[in-house]
Image 1 (cartoon, helix red, strand yellow):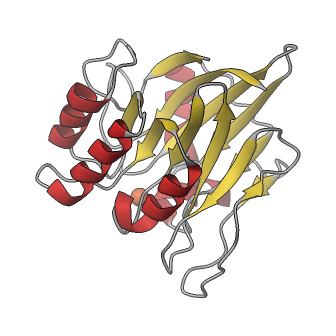
Image 2 (spheres, rainbow, N blue to C red; image 1 turned 30 degrees about the vertical axis):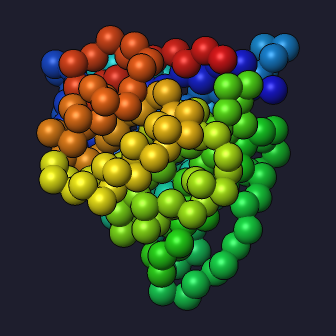
Length: 230
Ligand SMILES: [Fe+2]
């Protein structure tokens, strides 16, 4: 059982702290601590450039030695840094776009309570669903067709989504997708950390209305470092 997740947001469109380089893209280091003390590190996306990923990691004091790299979307701004970094690290990438894979939810290689959540779009976007004592903690990269269209059916099918982290693809006045986040909140969503593909105003709205987890940052973005306890 996962007892704790530490997150380091290493690449994102908007900075949450001084000193990091903001850039259109996403990379989050997920450090999973299991009961018994075993820790596994998943690098969720890499952002477009390894130079920015490494620089921000250095600025934030993050040791970037993941056990596995998970790519959410076959697009430069999500996995571009893989071109010239982490050549020997195991990686799980989505199938190429257009050819619909129709995959069921499956366990991520060798990791207990970590599942690949397949989006519904011809991009074959995929996210992660972590089974925790409080409910599902879901991490998504881009929500390329908007959160509801891309992952909505999958999220509702999970049951209680306790936490939602990542690119939600919601603009300031996107009442359609904001209403979907409200629906998740009515079903038990307590932690919401909007990143990437989510506008500044939409991030603030989501944090104010739907997040009750104290991250300690004015806005969610590059540089957020937090321990999530279960
Ligand atoms: Fe994206």
